[in-house]
Image 1 (cartoon, one colour):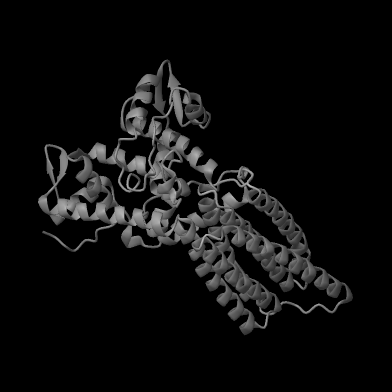
Image 2 (tube, rainbow, N blue to C red; image 1 turned 180 degrees about the horizontal axis):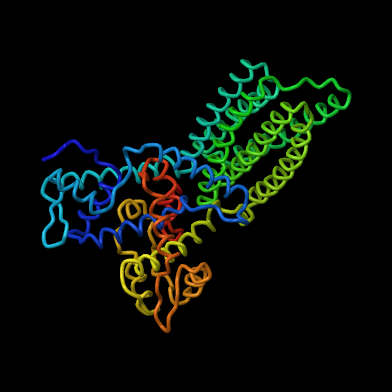
Length: 462
């Protein structure tokens, strides 16, 4: 038995599939693979017209994937090659064209499944509950405060030092929010966050006006070490993007106004970070007032957000039903759109691996592939598969229309065929996952797309 090859993510995926539904043919394993890859919603390419926040999220997600692509020694091979590697290990055997686990392979696969189930449980317990989100926010805010204050003191940058001071106040506020949630004083926590927003808007507005006046009289002190400010704020922006989506998701799923209020604050920090970077860039060009002008408009937006949240808090205090519809669940439309893309990928895939098919045959294949009982490794453990049978016939034109417009699909009489463009599209799609592996961050992102029809408790509601 050979032991000189690393077992990577795809190997575990194949063994988990064989444990649950083996023995399986090579084609059936490929089917599992394309289903899994098609449902990884955050690997899609941002489209024109998408909101700035969503485009920024997908850009950061793809940046992470590009960094992973540097691991040339960890490139995933074809399914047949990966199965051959598992056979070398003595964990899989091939009989009459069907792969099955050996006794030792079953033990290893069972461990993979149990590890994935523990990871899924950990995500639900320590990440998607309200008190866990508040605690994680406090930790990350503390890290940002230390980073900004330290950089500000080293560089002598007034802007960074001020931003670091603001981050320190956020940390204290987040800690108080955590205590309020932990000890069931959420109304007080919500008011604390709202007060912080009012304070931030007035403070930023005041600083902006005084800086603009100083710039008018030519007494404004230029930003020190602008390159350091760009780097530090770039990191802070990525952290703020994460916090915005994380807090908004947990807050909306659990109907928690406190976390939704914090997500508004995190969104504002994204714009503040960009204003500091803009100021640093213009400082390099000898223009010193741009960041102050941008910050003034940001302060007005923060004040408006604070007023809206205060109204919601007052309504909740009076016992009125809270309206969270204005606080959109982040990426919700992307999840729904990606389901359609997953269906489209499957249509192209079955035409790629087989003969031409009729509409009836394609719908039958879709119903079988996306059946809630169909086990998909990782996604099934995270409850991130389809929870009910989709109306493929009703959405037929919605699925196939774009494919025909892009000339990925062709219709001859009553039969659908894959075009050369469609074949190339699938090859490019598969190549996008050459180095993909399921890390803890992937587990969190995949779990976010779980169907909302599942019990709320599983989503993290206490």
